[in-house]
Length: 418
Ligand code: ASP
Ligand code: MG
Image (cartoon, rainbow, N blue to C red; front, top):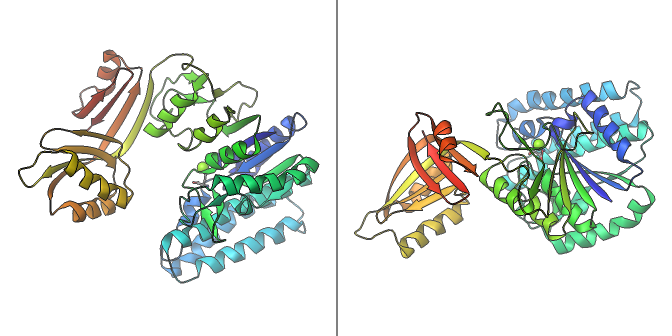
């Protein structure tokens, strides 16, 4: 069994869906395929605006129209016969979405997942019907009955034991129909509602399923030729990395390489399942493989750029140094507010940390710390991580910009610059 994941960009138009169907068709027969699909294009961004309480209800009709028009353009292209059952199925989902977004706001995390789930429910409904219509008979699975999370609803924590049990119940159906179409990103909470796994979480969904089903491999189909040594948006001459050790991939995703969701690698590493990253635009090209390798191949510097960073200095107001007790207080607040630290460094008198720009969280952080500490910060910075760096490379990247903070280990340097 193989698990495939198709992200929003790979299904963002009728021709993209046809291309995706082609890829599925060519791999069917070799083995059973479990295909995990994201919402089409940027649908999730649109749906986030329809979460109750986010925008005034008066704006909902226009937003809903945008979502429905976008999908109907794709459906009309794929299904010229308007009596096709896909029309009823999708209309039903749009009605539920409209009802959901009209509810009075309750808990944001709860409302969020009950609303944004329609992106994946709609995309998989369209794709499942389309594949059936071209003879690729498939089983549409509502993943909310399979992947179980806690009751956080948004960024839910996966209950692997319950999920594994649910996937085993799926096996008899998969054995009779060797093509499964299901949703990425969404899951079912312990108390029986919809939950989500965090933005860009479909990679993680595919990895959870690969782990639980003991897949022979997992493939993420992307709009890039594989795992590149830098984001091509920022870097003209990227090099494709052919082989990446599991731990290296985890480090890179953690530092902010956007090619895979950071939680993706651990489950497949535990089962020694290789993860292929391939281009849906050039499906025969070899792509990149994450697996049990000892080094990256070819060995080349890797660059990760994170924009919109805040560098915060926290200084005790009393005569104390920055030591264990002060750090304990600071970290308790960071953990409580769920703020991720991208880089940190301390001196005797101050503790510096680099976090994503977020004025709301920064205010809350200040409210929580201002009795004991003074806070200074700089916003709109860039955090650059370079693995396998040389001084030459650092000089070239930094150029004439001001370095506010820098750290080096033997393999990695991280630089915060203005
Ligand atoms: N549709 C979700 C998002 O845009 C999940 C994903 O694409 O992986 O974040
Ligand atoms: Mg996506």
